[in-house]
Image 1 (spheres, rainbow, N blue to C red):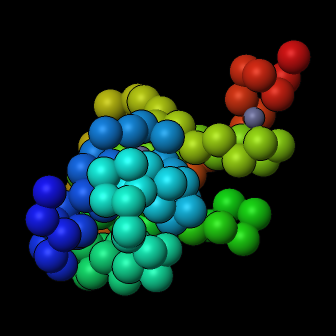
Image 2 (cartoon, rainbow, N blue to C red):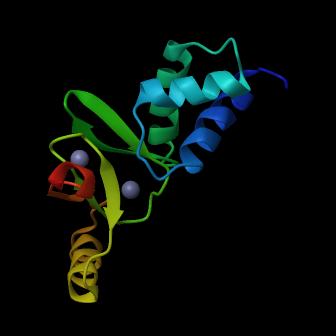
Length: 125
Ligand SMILES: [Zn+2]
Ligand SMILES: [Zn+2]
C-alpha cells in the first residue's frame, strides 16, 4: 500500500467510517497502524483536523479530556455515559428532530450537536 499523504488521510477516514464507537485519536491511531505500520500519532491528529476542516468528520465531544470523533456528519444525537465514556448514537422523536433541523435551517447554523448524558447498560448493572 502506498503511504503518501492522501492514503494516510484515507486510512484515518476509513477507520473512523468502520466504527460506531466514536473513537479517540489514540484508538484511531491503533487501528491505522494495522493498515499503515509506520503512521505516527501526530499524522493521525493532523489528518483528523484536516478531515474535520473539510467537513468529512466531526468532533463529537470531549469525554474526560479526550476528543472523540465521528464519520457520521448528518445531524444526529449522542448519548454519553459519564461512567465509562461510551458514546452512542441515539434516536430521538421525529418532533424533536424536525424542530432541530428547522431551527438550524432558519438560523443558518452549520451543524447541530445535541448530547444526552446517561449511564450505559453495562455501567448500570
Ligand atoms: Zn458506561
Ligand atoms: Zn455519532
